[in-house]
Length: 176
Image 1: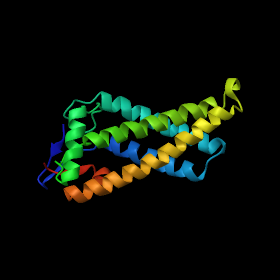
Image 2: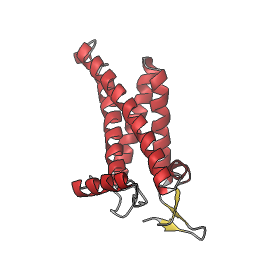
Image 3: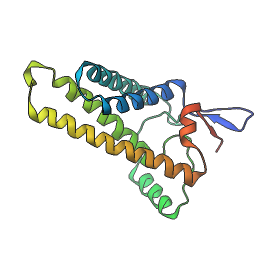
């Protein structure tokens, strides 16, 4: 449950959520430019581990907690897309329905990259081109989704007149 203070803001994102977010973001960016070798591999394992912990954390949170993970309903997604077309979106403390789908997609891609990267090191699949290609395609998909995530943050910040990137740094958002 978000905590309120006298400044007119609400604590939305916990320290754990913010640290895991920025850790994964930094590793994804680092691995984009350092795409081979043991540092790339172990950084990827750390990112996958951070995502796994974030997913567990989100599943353990109450429904009214911004960090709670759950699949949004198709009705909520359609309503949000309709609001976007009208440029009149309702503010949310946590992820909006489309934002939650993007978060799940990003986390799934990081986990899939961790698994396929790990598999390339196993004797059973050593040197398998299809696995290396799959890992590369997943990395491209992650890069595209990261760009989509950035675009979504910018668009929603503009539509809601609220700095969402700042909220992920401070953990605080203006009260609803």
